[in-house]
Length: 507
Image (cartoon, rainbow, N blue to C red; front, top):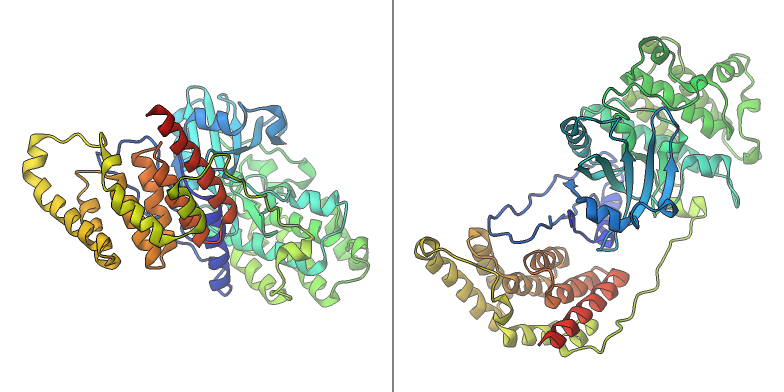
């Protein structure tokens, strides 16, 4: 598989990041490094999640076919028009993470290098206000982009085709601000061009928060000339020069403000006529039933008018959008999911279909003492065949490295877990040998030192080294349980039990 991480780990980090960065919506965590050791035996790339955003990586075509049931029509969630033909599928990876996969035609991107360069460019943009691009696949004639999946529909659906409730005024202001923050971030970080910005591009995540789709940051063809929305909503300069500019994005943002104000599609020219005629009340969505602040609405109407100016130079810049909308925010303590009437989709934890071994029972109880006893007794018997060392490697590096591991083993046995972490880290950092057992032991040490995030990373790395090793899945299960991600923990426990039973049958 091209990428591996826990979706619920991302959720936890996301919630923490949002909580600690309420005053800093432009929080953008650094991308962590990956393991490039020449002895790394697996084709799997371990994706570590920081701040709720998965790192960018390449996916294999087989993984994406498997995730989307061979690109089944049942998995299609979005389909564009004939001018810029592409499809968006939802999919689920083997680690149970949901993804969105955008499938282009080869005709749109005949040069694979151009496509990969464009994907990597957008992949560098990481923000909690974006449905981030997390990877791509370029295999033969296939051109695919992979993004975080947003399960709660689009702004178009919630504004124009709602069934249970319309979006209340306070939430509409939040949507406007979050989209403005996404535009400002992209503009600041070298991605000012957004293709075909409209209400379909605003998606709602599992917490009900609005995010701007990353797909609009990628050109919809090698020359980016296709514009798929109704020409009545297209920036006027696009009709003249045939290209999107940074000012075009502001114009399109103005049309989103019109959508939020009116609850219906109003062509910009008609809306401007209404605004000039002081018919603001007629512009407002009747489904709000007057439940909005006239002063706030006037500010938004004025901002929309500025965005929709015919001359690009007369439109505000992204920072002006944010500074205008930020003071209008109220009820910030109320989660978006409550305002939107979105129910959290909790899946029933799976129950292992196999009898539990002592290791499985210990992990199910999250009994770290019992797990420690089992790992001490198991020693390194599961490491056989994971290393092939040359004589030169042995003579130059093995003594010091094995000595570090030996000191780690003594500390692990004696329950000196911080010392064990230091010693095992020395062994791992050299990189000449890879040992799934060392990663599993260090994972337990991290758990006993109350560092479940680090424990999960080590358990995932153990799986990369030894993909069919039940202990790696067991340790992931315990780490996920410590992170209160009980659904994923149960899934991992079931997976580990199945692998352990399969190995026993093999013996």
